[in-house]
Image (cartoon, rainbow, N blue to C red; front, side, top):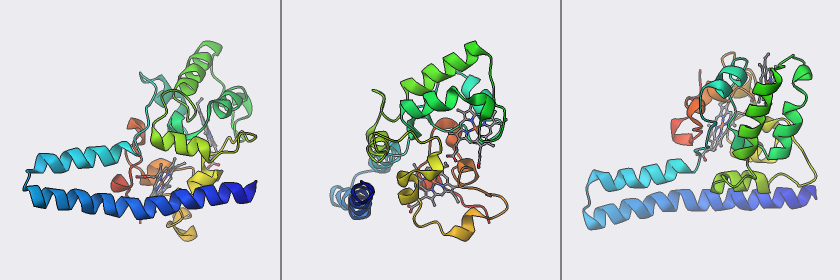
Amino acid sequence: MISNLLSKIASHAGNDRLMRPSRGKLLGGLMVAMGVVATMGMVGLSHASQDAQFPMPEGKTYIEECGGCHTAYAPGLLPARSWIKLMSGLSRHFGDDASLEDKTRDKLTADLVALAADSRAANALMQRINAAIPASATPERISKTGFFNFMHDEVSGSIWRRPRIGTPSNCMACHTKTEAGRYHEREVHIPK
Ligand code: HEC
Ligand code: HEC
């Protein structure tokens, strides 16, 4: 099963490496050939950035309650079963007590489930994240999923340990727009 998952991820990786540059080249070529104006390039850009755009719960509650200790992780980074497990154990949350009032907890759980990787809201990237998680697994850490490792295979071990990063869980150290659900590689800024 593990080798299955690995080959699935490997083929995703292959696709990405092959397709990303050629898509750019193709767009570039088209623009030169057609002599079109900059707006056309912006259409191309906004299309590409949708790839790493996750929907976020409406309102401020999620960011306030779940973004105080760490990045307010986009719900689409884990399947619904993971969020349900995580939200039902908040009093013992990775060594911390992150308990909420029942009403707030239930509202946030519903929001997380509605926008999870296996929800109807799932875009192409979320569907790939979901497909890379075995149906028998319920991960509570995004940073330990195979998908996370494949997405970050070009980030070397010593970078994660830099003082302003500290841990792979600290998405917002490098992805500066996580509160808006944006993780696009174009917007990555790795602190020195
Ligand atoms: C009191 C502080 C605190 C609050 C509040 C809190 N967390 Fe956490 N959370 C932690 C700690 C500590 C970790 C472990 C971080 C690490 O090991 O790097 C963690 C880890 C996580 C992870 C795994 C991150 C990874 O490595 O991929 C998820 C997912 C998560 N929290 C979701 C939530 C959600 C959802 C809420 C809101 C209901 C929440 N957290 C509120 C302290 C908190
Ligand atoms: C050390 C900085 C750093 C941290 C911390 C980090 N990332 Fe990344 N992330 C990157 C870099 C660099 C890339 C681009 C990698 C590449 O193209 O090989 C990336 C790529 C991604 C992508 C794909 C973006 C795209 O345009 O396709 C996603 C999704 C992502 N990261 C999510 C996360 C999440 C979720 C976390 C936290 C749990 C996180 N990252 C933590 C540096 C980081």
